[in-house]
Length: 280
Ligand SMILES: Nc1ncnc2c1ncn2[C@@H]1O[C@H](COP(=O)(O)OP(=O)(O)O)[C@@H](O)[C@H]1O
Ligand SMILES: [Mg+2]
Image (tube, rainbow, N blue to C red; front, side):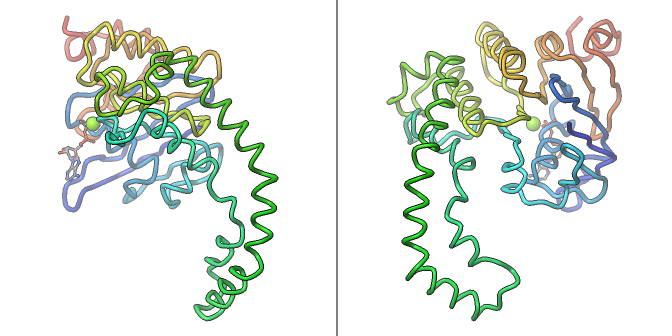
């Protein structure tokens, strides 16, 4: 489903990834393990278009995506749950979930999108916009009402699914996100990502800053999301124990290079992994 080949990525003069390759088969859970600074977040940023790789290729369902914008990549069916959750902490739980659905339900105003067509001259674009404002607006309203019911149903279905996975979010839907516990905030971050109904979910260190019990609960839910809905998952982690428990396949990233790649079962048995990541 996802194929990353030999990507090099840098922040100015600092090269963070020196030719990383990895594959995520459809329906699987794949983990990328690595110490702080190994390049885990950079790998996810390169995949989701937040950082353009200097070289290498990224394919999603057979098509190159390494030159697309982050918005375009999201619309293909990928959700990125960033490190540190990045919630709208002043907004309520429900408002955060609504914003997660935004990418999926946006782009219905065909007229104004057309006005951004690159083959129109600036004057043509202006004329088109004025024309659209006068006439297209009415068409859009009609189309909007027809589409509204369907969108509303899709939204409710996605919301109910999120509440099934995370019942606590249903109980807290009017609570301000910033006042939730760390574990609840991580649940909300994942829930917000699920609102876009992704086929590939990318998770950046979901265990960060959480107590072991809470981390375990979240990993069990990640496993359930994969199992019951068939959502493919790429999860990067420092917590190798839990990640290897739920993943089918794993990679070990060391200073921007893949040092090991194997089934989770073999990685768990590997001496190098035990020494460096499992604290044994
Ligand atoms: N915004 C940034 N500017 C400059 N260097 C960065 C930036 N983000 C990360 N780096 C560097 O890139 C390398 C990889 O970082 P990162 O991908 O965040 O690692 P990880 O997620 O595995 O902890 C590190 O050396 C880090 O210092
Ligand atoms: Mg990171």
